[in-house]
Amino acid sequence: MHEDRLSPRELEIARAYALGDTYHRIADRLCIAPSTVRTHLAAIYRKLEVSSKLELHKMLDGATPSRKSQAEQAEIISELALSLEEAISRERALSEVLRIISGTEGQVREVIAALLDYALELCDAEFGLLFICTPTNGFRATYSRGIPQAFQEWFTAQGEILAGPETALGRMAASHEVVNISDVRAEEVYRTGDPLRDATAKLGGARSFTAIPMLAGKRLVGAFTIYRQSVRPFDEKAMQLARMFADQSVIAVENARMMSELRSTVGQSAQKPAAV
Image (cartoon, rainbow, N blue to C red; front, side, top):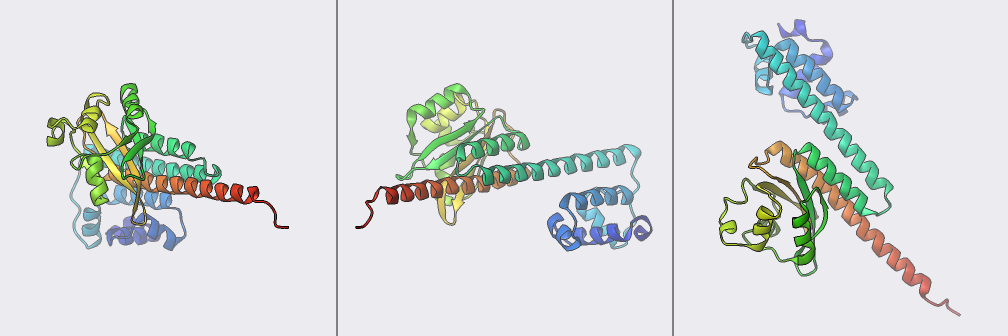
């Protein structure tokens, strides 16, 4: 029986996880770190010889475990180790980003650079852009990392971009939803010669990319975009990571905006003559 192979703490975590609790909920309830929950789950999967939450649930319900070869067991262990390493990397990245945000006093460029760097590394992308919405409902490519020089020069020359309704930015702006492009050259908007899509494909060399809306409430602040230069569509895990970095980007941009407004207000007050 599985009770004989798991410690009381492991059994508690296994049951909670199988019933749908997240790492963070389990960690909060048991007063341990989420990474500790993952470590326990890696041991649980190894001891019970399961490789998914569904298998774990069946085992805890009394199902007979299927026999696995040594090669299959080694594959499960390596996948679990890799998943654990990726999860820890994500936590460290988020912690570092929050530290940078809290210590920059509104200096947004350093924060966005860090966010894009982490996003490119963890989402396995070649380059990234952060677009800020303009007062005329256009977009300005304000921050970038790893972008090809020719593509960067094109954005500099364009200044404000009025994205067409069929482009990723246009669709994202209209829906406030994530737009995930499998292949920029496969869509009709590329064949119509849209200038933004044409530059993305030819100057940026992009094939797959995702555009994440940056929202402050219902207001669209901008777009967080990451690109791959081969046809490798972003999966749900990568898009969840990109959403996390987009959310942090909103915090950084809004903090910088409020700091700028505060400094402007203070400056104007200091220039007013004192009342006699």
